[in-house]
Structures are given as structure tokens and as C-alpha cells.
Length: 442
Image: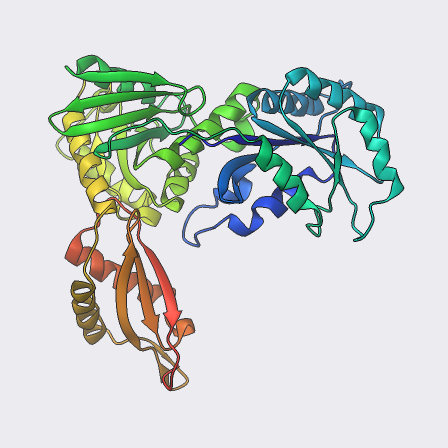
């Protein structure tokens, strides 16, 4: 689904980032054993009155500045205005309306986009201060007094954003279509893979553009099933994201992951695994997506009978935070092992969708706790009463215990490994929710 984009823009130091954090801070989950991809993102989902949208923070706009960094921030903000469905223009009541505010307002009016004027740093409750009325001079309609620190007034502001959001329509695909996001660094061969797949298949249902802004969905039907391949822009290291178009290509790539059922993480065999690959993979893991690592350009590697196994062993160490992920060595150029990639995509999708009965889960749990006793602390031993699976994509298990603090990460990983060894769950993360059950044992 292509979510509407709400861009938060304004001069430097008016509180844009504080407002951004206030809007999304309670909804941003960080998984403890995953590389910190969420910490340095400047965009995230937000939900208001049952409607989801993507909030994008931007650098401050200094319309007349010749400073190189400020000029880059201005270019990014201009692109935010171009790509956004709704714009939240943040101003500062303590400074009043400045010449830069007027210049930014004119820029926003020319865009023709819905604009919500937020006047920040109104930290006191009660009647708005008289200074608020000065902001009517910007010609952007009613100003909304807010406090990004305390959250005052943000509800009224979000109501206005909600009214301005376009309807979010998803391209209709049959339920048996598997949506696949091909992600990775630039030049890893993502588009080459899509082109190879589309060019060699006998049945191409359609090419649908624009479902995720400026990307293309390629719909394929073959003997392995029905697939929707989402080509994405490469995700660079944040310090190298300087061009304004590239900045938003990263946003589109993350949004493609959100839409996908399975993520194919493309690596360049000649470069090997890099820190940025861990960021890309970590985001897919964090979102609970089934994953396959495709090592591309394998045809260019000089090989002997041990090369693939040695490379696989190194990757297993590199991807230790995603020990469940399978690897396939391909060539997008020659088509080598493309059929194997199809098989893995379908297999990991099924694993991500697997549902295990409560009875079978608790048989495994009983065996695991008999084999390795649960941990104890100061005479209190962890008791695991039972386990159930309420949801899939990813498989999520609720475990009822007497003391949640005793269910240490290491023992949780042990239980996870026992479940994986019994049921597979290859290619998919799993989630554990630990709940204490009241009573004498607590």
C-alpha cells in the first residue's frame, strides 16, 4: 500500500524534529538484537483516527542562504514539498513571523499542496496568546498553536492533516500473489534482476507504475506461482545521501519493504557484506518480513570447489543477527539459479505465514523445559505455563509465565531455537510476547 506522505517543513530551530518525534515516538519500535536502523531514520509511520501516513522530517529552510549545507537542506525540503501530499509548516511564536517565514510560505503556496500552519512553542494551556494572530499574515489559513515538547494542540493540528489526506488506495492483487521487494545498495543488480525475470518469463500479466511513488511493480506468473516484484532504489549509507532525489529514493525503498511479503536482499559478490547491508537487512527484519539473501554477480567470481561454502560460512557470520535467513548465489546477467530464487521466495513466504497449533507448541515447550531447566533467581524459578500463536507474518508467540523478568533473552533464544528445529521457520523472524499470569506463582 502506498501511504500518503506528510512533510514537516520550516526554518531551522523552530522545533520540527521535536514535533516529528512527538508524533511518531510512541510508535517507533526498536528490536534489541537488530542493527539500529530506526534510530537514524527521518521518516516513519504515524496513525491518526485510524488512518496511516508517512511523516517526513526535513532540514530547516533558509531561502537566501549560500552556505553549502544549508543549501542542501533547502533542496531536500523543496523535494519534500514536491513529493508530499500534505505539508505541515512549523513556525515559532517566540520569534514571530520572520522574513524567511514569508519566503517559505510563498514557496508552499506555489506548490498548490494542502498546508497546515503550526505555530510552535505555545507551551501554556488556555487562551492562545495575542501573538498568534500575527501568523494570519502568511496567508495560509488558520494557525494551529502547538507545543511540540508537551504535545499541546497537536490533536487539532492532526485533525486538519487528517482532513487533507488523500484516499490511500492499494493496487488490487489476488491473495495468491506474493509481493517481493528487491532491496540493497546501489549497483548490486536489483534492476538487472527484475529485467531478467520480466524478459525471460513467458507470462507477464502487467507492468503497473506508481503504486509506490516512482517505482514499478512487475507482475509475473510462472510455474512457481504468482509474484509482484517491487524494484527499489539503492539504499546508501546515510552520510552519502546528499542528493535530494536520492534522499527520497531511500524513503521509497523503505516504503516498498513495508508493502512486501518477502524481501530479497541483494549483495554484490565482488564487494561482499558491508555495514550498510546490515542496515538494509535489519530494517526488513525489524518489520517482520520473510527474507532471502541473493548474492549477485556470482558469475564474476573466480571459484574452486570450496569457494561457495567458504563464502556461505562468512555470510552466516555476517548475518548472525538474522541466523534464520537462507542464501542463494545468482547471476542476474546470465539467469544462474533464478529458479532457485523463486523457490526460496515461495518457501520463506510460507514459513512467514505458518501457524502452529497450541498443542504442538506446548509439546515442544515441555520437551525444551525438561531438557534445559528454566533459569532461577534468589530461589524463584521461571515457570512457563503455556504458549500460543495469535498471529502470523511474522509468527508471533505469546508465552505465559510466572515472572517475566526471569525469562531472560538467552533462554528465550533457546526456546526459539527449539521451535525452529521442530517446525523450520526458515527465512522468517519470530516474535515473542511474554505475559505474567497472576496467582501464587507470580
